[in-house]
Image (cartoon, helix red, strand yellow):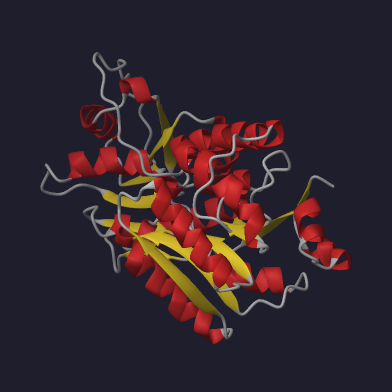
Length: 345
């Protein structure tokens, strides 16, 4: 496999790029790290009517993909708590708006959904002496993020790599050596994943890139993984390596030549039109809402004081497989009944 390629993309490749680029742009809004966009004036926030129940403020992006989870969270909590959901649009988001939401709701706890929301809240929370306890949900790399937010706890949105790889093994892949490409800033995250992998006699073949990698750096990393003859590639949920530029110039032209299934951490990357991710293990969003409610009930029992911070793993996982890609890599179709969602069948 050559590191350089000057051939123009075929029509099929262009269609794959288009399908996947749209998904990644959506992903960057819903679960990836993003820089908030401030705008004035912000909308007028009307105070809620009086209610004796303790208030839990939920701050989330305005995204239809979150509706089911938010609805479930409200149902789980509403018997004993008053849940006020504030949906933010990028054009009106700012730390000042977060401050106004907290002042309006006077919450005992705040639930922060998505990286961009957490970043807004963090900027505000660092300016006040005693911010309310915060629960971080559906944020990428929650372990790193949670440590930077005062008075917070989190539920991880990344399913451990070992869980995904064991799921792939149930479909008949004899996987032992797993390739992973990551940016330097996520080395600690990869090290934690690697320790868990050893339990199942799985090993990472690692390609570490700088925090601002070039196209040729990613190409070279994939060439190295192909030469290492890895059994599969595990791709962390890092938008920095999933930009449209990298998708167009590296991932889609090269991933077919690797001869190994790509295991992804986001549902949208298993897409029959893009032919990119073969398998994904993702949190069950309904179970995530129940788990979040349990954490908040624990906080209520502790008088809204954190007994321990840190990050909890998701309690339930959904698995997806691209049927055509799975068959291409020789996975056992008789085991597809163990997968929650079959894509492209």
